[in-house]
Length: 175
Image (cartoon, rainbow, N blue to C red; front, top):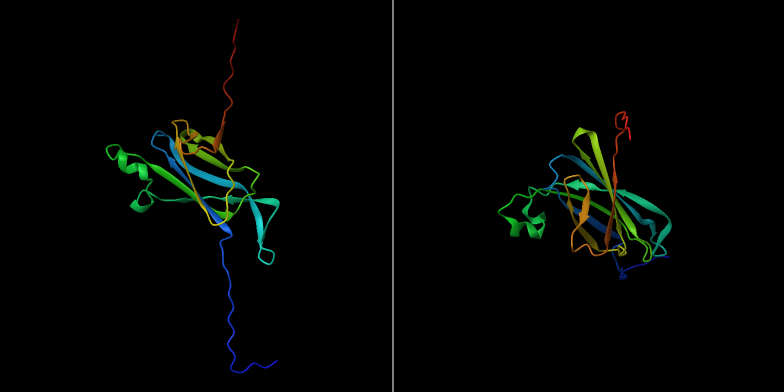
């Protein structure tokens, strides 16, 4: 088929299929913090463009990347300005992934590496679905032991902490 001097117009409706998550952590109270890492579980495995559908047959684990926020004033949490007289330090971890199912919670597993080779793992469980095209910012505070505590605005976030217990010495306890 030959087409001469013909103009065709197509409307293509584009929309977001990914979502972004940022975990902003106030680390001021933890003096023994060495490094942080996190991963997000529970998002769709893939997106089928032809069917415009997410595949939830299995879920995908997304590693979160640490973003330096101490040097960029635009990325600072808004509540920092109100506490200008005290010094606060923050860590920010981000990822971009697919949406989550409406009726299934999704999790962020956060590990804090502390001095003396100690590790504390906190699992944040989020009940609100992560919708495509959205940005979810989760603000938490780290205590002195490396445990995360959701801030008041984290109304749909629950935390569970797993400590890195080391074997102790021999004890001879007499009663």
